[in-house]
Amino acid sequence: MSRQSTENIFPACDVPQVSEAGVVAICDAYGNDPHRMLDILRDMQDRYRCISPQIMTIVARQTGLTRVAVEGVASFYSFLSLTPKGRVTIRLCDDIVDRFAGLADVVHAFEDELGIKMGHTSGDGAFSLEYTPCIGMCDQAPAAMINDIVVTSLTRDKAREIARSLKSGETPEQLVSNRFAELTAHERATRMVENNIRHAGAVLLGPVPDNAGLNKALDLTPLQIIDIIETSGLRGCGGAGFTTGKKWRFAAGAPAERRYVLCNADEGEPGTFKDRVLLTERPHLLIEGMTIAARAVGATEGLVYLRGEYAYLRELLESVLEDRRARGLLGKQIMGVKGFDFEVRIQMGAGAYICGEEGALISSCEGLPGEPKTRPPFPVDRGYLGYPTVVNNVETFCHAARILDRGAPWFYGMGSSGSHGTKLFSVSGDCFNPGIYELPYGLQVRELLEMVGGQDAAAVQVGGPSGTMIARDSFERRLSFDDLATGGAIIVFSGERNILEIVEYYMSFFVHESCGYCTPCRVGNVFLQKAIGKFRKGLADPEDIDYLKDLSATIIETSRCGLGMTSPNPILSTLENFPLVYSALAKPSNDRVRATFDIQSAIDSARKLAKRRSYIYDKDFSQ
Image (cartoon, rainbow, N blue to C red; front, side, top):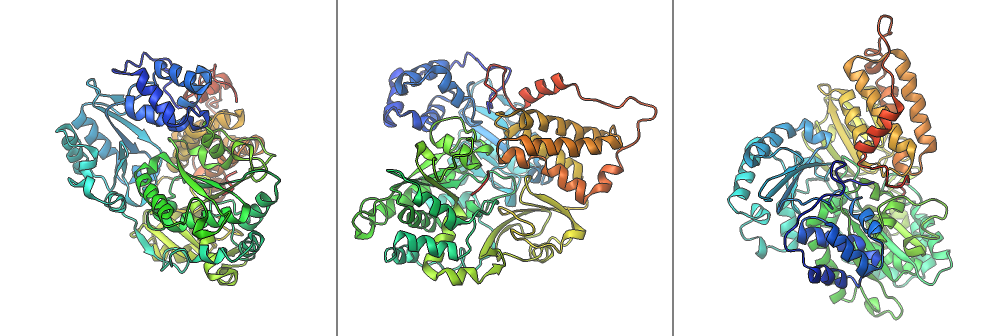
């Protein structure tokens, strides 16, 4: 999806001191490899504050692509810009949890102190102020990114203090510490963001011995490793729950001269932040799990796709990789084993929720716009660069390392039937103790609410916007693959919250984050969002309820990827579990004309809201 302003797709973008030699040097640093296009453009953005026509022309020449292809990538990601950004870009998280936590007051404080409105850049080019979707800090909202520095638990007064400090000449890093350069990478990360580990379970957040799983994997054949993972009952922890061992077995069995292991660290689902904590506290365990997977499937290269919102963790992860190389745990002949070679690099994202879908993630790693791929073939047969590829998320790889250490029966014995082991729950919203809870699968929602101090909850969003919203009469349901499946997000809402306000926000989120490839998702979700707006304004009639159901079913049936297939869930789950909210607002239109949709107007709105132009081509979350 093109995420640039539709008012200025081809701006003058007058960036001073754009040096051809400088642009060429950045391209050379990545071997002029078109597959590294996202890295190249991120570096251009950091250096020149936008991707100008001049830059795109030079990059196209250096990488052997067309200018249109380069612009297609530059216009897709929200952290890349075709228009100049300020030297300091402040991105305020616009998630519903942040809104309920006082975001409006924070916005007004920044606008007042900086003298600019949201979505604008100051005349002197010093500051840009903008909204961004969930940045993975819902347990300490409101939050913001200031360049790559994260600030949390914002208030009106704290926002004013930050703005004044920046105007006085302080760097974003100095907001963290005046001795920022002297801090270790881990200290920098934890000074910015609280981990809020509320309950450490037996698998991931309790005591973890160093490389115990990898040591044991060295004494096993690849097929034995896969057998252990499959016997353990481990399923993908990103939400879909595909059996991890089967995925590894398929990749290992696909005929190919090389294979890849990719870690999906792009947890963009609003309300999810569990991987953020693992990346901070268990980064070695993650790389250990990837290394075990590499041995199992015969891969020699791996990538960690780190979401752009977690750029503050990049230095920490790079230091972990360097440490492991120095200790013989990564690189050539790992731990002295001839033929066991595996290297990992960090691939940064640049602000695109759709890249959490494994096909879109692979496209992004290949230097393309992050658009889902047509299936079949599946990644285990034909993935990154056309080779068999294992894609799992952070939590899954960490579990795999622990299973190799403790054994399949140990892991299988925790949790419930069909949902084995523990799960990290990211809890936020209207509760006293938001944070991370590592608990066995199978506990009731009510039990979790008691732990987090959410006894006054009237609604709980399980699995983020693409999941299910349940009411009090469903709090006895269990968190498991067979009942309420979740990638980790648990958002608590009290009775003071407006259910339809939450639904309308989630639909606006899906409209914004659609890649725009297929019409049902690109246009259909705009229709749904407009329909919810009618309910909120008191303009809906009973027929609109059936309309919501029918259109939702069409979008689910005809969308190309997991985003479209799950995007109507905020509406469908609330229609099922909060029917009175809709029926109370739907009134028969006896003496008024029923509001109808103008399809061309809706398509135009879709293009605008999804940040697309007509010249841009028309174009499963299984971790």
